[in-house]
View 1: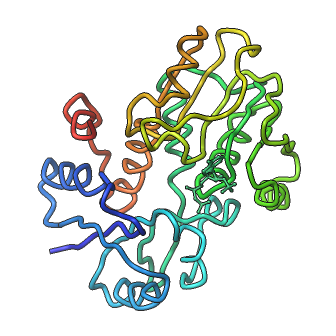
View 2: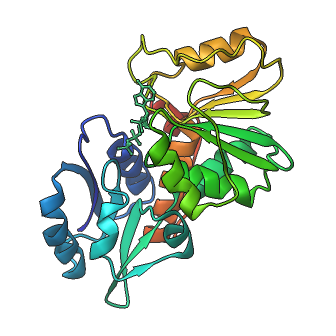
Length: 263
Ligand code: ATR
């Protein structure tokens, strides 16, 4: 039986096993997908297990998407450009790291019929998923990408990789067409982002990477102010879709049943 794992710390909240095991069952694949909490010192041995074929594929989540890179033999272009790996597999005896968060974000935006071309995109946060969102926004031909992070140094680090992005001081709200919350603010129901959105106008896209809770205070406010709102559920589903396709060579189903698994 083939074995797949999602690794992270914490990992309890991860819904990847539910989704992947549903697709594994639907496609009659002889495999199992589990989650494993670990520490940085465990990464080397885990990758050895992939090399030996004891584990057939890995998904990687916070906080290992970058630190895992040093143990891999090859990176896809997307993983290289973002220095972020969320999917690992063995190819010709080499451990390859890929990033399906980019496709996940692009497909999520496409599926709500929103077009980034020529748009001003304002991203809040500078954590693990932000390089993927910047890369996807560039691919989708956004006109301007602005980043604001509480700790400015981290945002400056991103500018090193993506020199066309503009940095915005935390607390300031520039003119934008799309705003993306990529901070962890909103994971707790009472979390509020302390920014003044009252002057941003209507008909923008408020996008939250968080999907649990399904409607953060950030999205609630966006809606109240007359904007289009979307949570990160589809991004999560599509990044899993791309990993599944890569490992098993099959397009899994995305329908009401799969979406309900994540409620
Ligand atoms: P990591 O930073 O380890 O990659 P993450 O969950 O991907 O973890 O990122 C957390 C993001 O939420 C960061 O951008 C963080 O800002 P800092 O870099 O200043 O820590 C942001 N964040 C978390 N709590 C916040 C708060 N109370 N106010 C503003 N931003 C916050």
